[in-house]
Image (tube, rainbow, N blue to C red; front, side):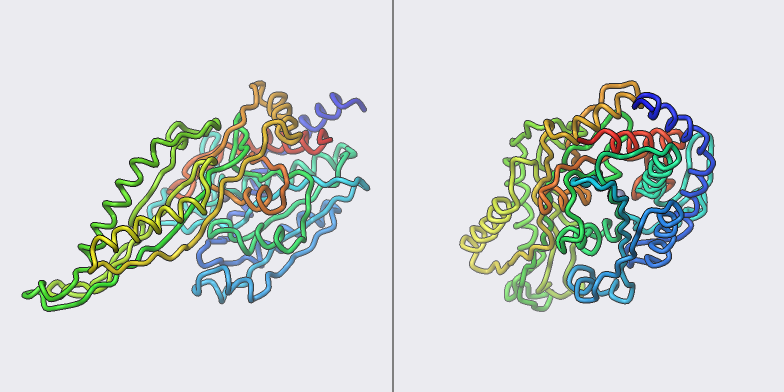
Length: 417
Ligand SMILES: [Zn+2]
């Protein structure tokens, strides 16, 4: 069979799998893998492993060691064991292409119009928690493999598939565990989310999360002069961070981003903040968090040292100010060179499937991509189903894009070289 004929039969096969793809996504979403705390990971992992096994693809469910869980997840998650699924279609090749998806979802609010864990189709949309982030993408990945099997395709590289946990809380027990423990060492990778339609994710910004703690001296509210108000000192610091950020915002990346606003650094102060205990007591503690997103030209090391300098300078100028910063997370941006084979291969596949020119784009928000790019030094792209409402209410995916995305995955698997 020529490659054209093979692509055609894959397309034909997938066109008739619409209902099956919707059903599989519904079944995946019906296992509510909310994270935090990390519910029903075993059930989800076993179900996914069964899917691979049914196709004749050798698969393992890998439990994450307890030490890992305790090191990388908050205490509330320690009673919820972590699992990852790793499957491998050995084509007898030297090189391996990896497809990664995460199966955890963010918790739901009570404001959904439909049951978030019993997804329903309305017009061409499937509504449910995790439909687009990213269980629909898992469906497309599984059906890409089904299509390849069904059409007796012989992929040029080995195909490795992982379904991992914990992306929603940083990914260290999921993709991070597989990569850092050397359980996967692919030559190219596809994270099955990020881009959609004609957009292919070729990288994402970096991030620095920190908590700033201010220590004051408590006193009676009628006599504030003898105390040190940690809230007021904290506000003074907040203003210094804002001033600094105005300067940082003048930096602009040379990369093409998914949205205009992501071309510059961004900062959210006080995602979590608080302190003090009583209305008539001078607060002796106050803290606020910083969520700083880094353009690819910045580094965690530099931004962290800038932040420490802000605090140091403020403390030198105000002898009553006692503050320190704890780093919660720091990730440098992940960037795959547009000239890498995987970028070119993905662009060709997207053009054939969507009829539009595949466009590489660096994303403002991060995914598990950085583990593959920065740790495994593996050229990686991100691509998945179309949808909206991620992390919010009434999340949905566009049903038509399930088959299109599966086609893109299958064609990438057939044309890597
Ligand atoms: Zn996701």
